[in-house]
Length: 474
Image: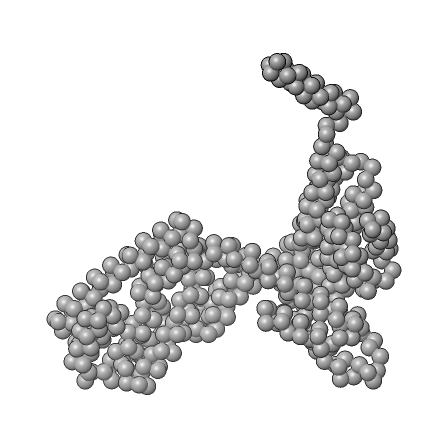
């Protein structure tokens, strides 16, 4: 009886499952296929919006077209594609115009960036290509000139001028390792010179002599160093015994760098001082051991992609010996890799700056000048060289002083480019919120567009659609 009941149960259960399977088969659609398809389309639209917002217009269009193939009658996707194409064209035009303006003003770095952006948006833009070639030609000429003048100033001991020249080269060609070495050595020499001057004024002649010796090693062409070193040696002639004893004390404490300075000071005045030679050899052996240890540690960290600690170890090497194997080159590479890792943080900062600028503009347009100034001051803390907030703050302060007495004829004095970018950002932000069925917030974003451009038909259209969706969901 028990076996019979089990057989009946299995027959009923399997029959029911088969019947359900037949129902699905008859409908021609798998049970969750429609839901999965909608989810995939939604995912592609969101991905497309994110790419468009980041300025990757071609990638955004490609993704939207993939979504369109899955749902050819979807009018929303068609409108997204059209809007991104329009945005791409506007972005291209803005980039070209901004590049031309920067080029005319002599801001070559900014001009190059804008023309590159215009070309990225449309590789067939011959006007942008031609202008970029012109900018690069001027940059190459200026870079070559600055490099030549920098080396010339370095060899003449004109270090402040050399630093300016090398920084100009770095601005246009950050990958020039030779100039990075020159710049690092020049900045180090300036520090050593300032220290040596201070040592001389305090009667610490051995320290001054050591600095002059290091400078000579960094720049054998400096015409002033031999004379300065000679003055330090002459003034320190009566302190040989004192320096020797200080060298022994520093050695006992394990302060090898200071011990080396003292023994070298002794030998600068008395080359035949046997005990100083003997102790200097021991000190240099200890220093070389440390250098080797730091260098190996730096290589180990670099191999593990721990660039921050690699930089620390390579820097320790160069503090003890300014030229050791390929340390300078490896330090430059570690810094470059570390900068790449930090680029994410810099991008977040750039996004924050943009948000603060835009919020400030919104407040300005509402005549909330004090609040706008507060936000733009935050931008300057993050980016002290940003000219836009400086201009905006100046205009806001003017309005606070005169705004109530006279009409603000320049209420929209902000760059057209800035306002158009704000419109695009609010549009894409709104679309992503709309796709997530967050209609209230989407409407709020699009209403911000109307504050800037009251006749923006696209914003009006999507606000109406979002309101209808919101009404249906109640």
